[in-house]
Amino acid sequence: MNSILGHKFADGNTPIRPEEAEGLIPRISTIGELNEYEALNILSARDWAFDGRTMTSRDPLDELYVRDLHHRMFDNVWKWAGTYRQTERNIGCDPREIVQRIPQLLANTRYWLENKTFPFDEALLRFHHQLTRIHPFANGNGRHARMIADVVAVKYGHAEFTWGAGKDLVAEGDARSRYLGALCALDENDVNPLLTFARS
Image (tube, rainbow, N blue to C red; front, side, top):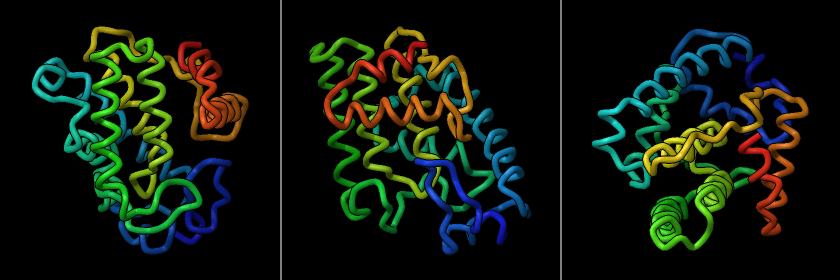
């Protein structure tokens, strides 16, 4: 566990705090093992999220779905999966604001899509960007925000995003740098880098 707590994470990754590390379910000792467990958990969640029955019966722009998806992505790894964070971060809103900001974002996104406020991809990428900025969970926010954007795209009859042609966006590298740079550009209301990256 010490190697996980002391690990130097790639820029933009949320470090694991001691109180959150106590919620680790499997007995692991390295960040590599953690990444493997999380990746397997995410594959299982993906099968659920894109299953035809789930697509028909669940609304991904519902607040319960936001938490349920995160829970399914990380429930075999973290006891706190699907639970909003309670601690401050160097990114994200005050944790006390999460319960208000998530429903507001979901309502805004639904409005954008129904009223064609933005082109479809732009609306979903603005949703993705704002969800990462709220940073609702202790960890896994980027992966969760990308998957839920893909789910909404498919639910509305569009293709999933490619997010840099399937590159690993968790590990340091060119793809992650481009992704984070595109998110920063949208901080300044320039959506074009993220539009390009998400469909590359």
